[in-house]
Amino acid sequence: MLVVMLVTPLANAYAAAPAAASFDTSAASLFSTGGNDTPENQFYSLTTNNFSNLEVVSSKNIFGADHFANKGNVIDANLGNAATWGYLVGGTAWIEVRANSATGGNAFQPGTYAGFVLGDTNIGVGSQIRVTTYLGDTQQESQIVSGSLLVDLGGGKYKGGFWAAQPFNRVRLTATGILGVGTVSVYYAEVFKPKAGPEPACNVYTNLNQPTYGALIGLAHGHLGRWPGHRLQYR
Ligand SMILES: [Ca+2]
Image (cartoon, rainbow, N blue to C red; front, side, top):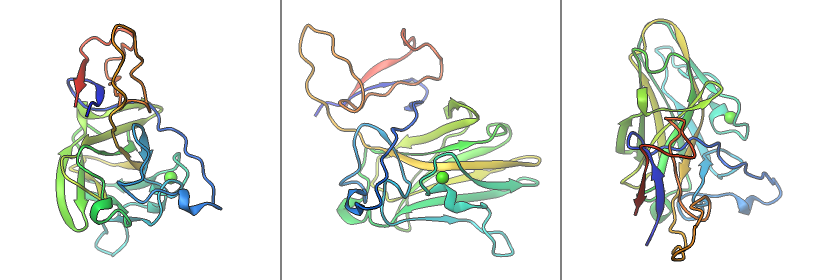
């Protein structure tokens, strides 16, 4: 199997907006359920216009209220609204998207990207953003994605996540140790399921682009066209 990826040395991340998904309420069968039917070679939001049977859960404060206000914004069809956690002095809060039909062999498989699009100008300053995958209630993997690992999408939005080595059906974002007063905004969770493209023909230029190939390129250095510091990765 050949999957071609263009990645940065710093982060296996890509800064393009996810492809717009059509939304047809009359054809529920078009909805994805998990690893078996998620479109390949594109970032695909874990939102109700793309997936059936989604759930979003937030950590709660001592009064039993969700830390993240408007948590439903994370899974609704509008990619422009967010769930927000307003903090005073530090602390920890998390928000988690569960793909409840992605069970058993339909879980997202190893090699799938799991992450979030979030916004907050204070992230990375005395704070930490972590992405954790779960299979049911069982934690699978967890990585810090804040600081230089975040990909700046512009417009105050950032992309943070990682390529999972274990199957999962839940993705959690945890914000920890933030100093001062501010807000963490979480827009949506997303996955990227890579798939091998056709073997490139010899001696001709071949465009290694989505969705034919699982082609990724980091934009962290802003040198599209010359790609210094980037490398080809074959899987
Ligand atoms: Ca939304």
